[in-house]
Length: 147
Image (tube, rainbow, N blue to C red):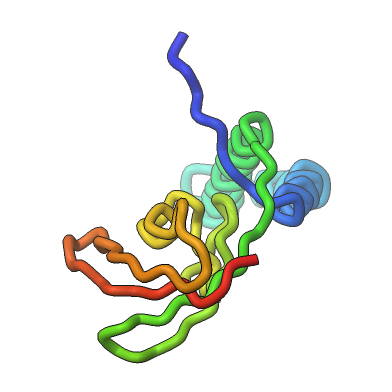
């Protein structure tokens, strides 16, 4: 059997997934089940848009349940690391949270597998280093803080 890679996730991220899983297995399954039952009562299923829509919702919900269960099965809890870096060519400072798979680049929450997280590995406050972006561009950075 192939080795399955552990999925890094923060304790908070794991708790949020557990809540979502419970909601999807209980409340959402019941809601969708009721919608399917009501649509069946309308008669001919071949031309019933409500039935088709409810079945699509059911499929999407079950897929998400499987996805969450997979993440939780292979979850490895990691601590959040807070960093501040200076983009030297732009003279711009940016704060980031390095977390697990629950990253959100729009909130400066980046994965521990991201190019920046990998680039800072082994560096300490005050170190200057180069990060190569996924598009192949080199960026000069300075690590201002790490906690």
